[in-house]
Length: 108
Image (cartoon, rainbow, N blue to C red):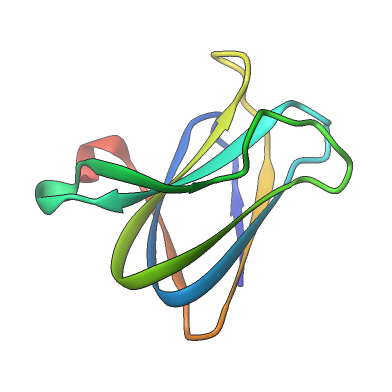
């Protein structure tokens, strides 16, 4: 399932179960990271469950893999340098249906 975004620090709500792989692409080769967090009650970030690792600007993008319990998670897409905005495509692969939703910080 592809998701298109355009913010430097993007929050995405993820409804998923079991096996998940996220792939993040950005055409301008800006160093990126994608991190998955548990969602705490009230919508706040909980424990980190997966990350793409160090920021990278490879042509193949960055990816994160996780084994998740059923629930709602928050995906944070970020750039290495603060204030840098760029378009990106986040694609989610899983063994069950996955739903991605853009979330404004005030909607948490």
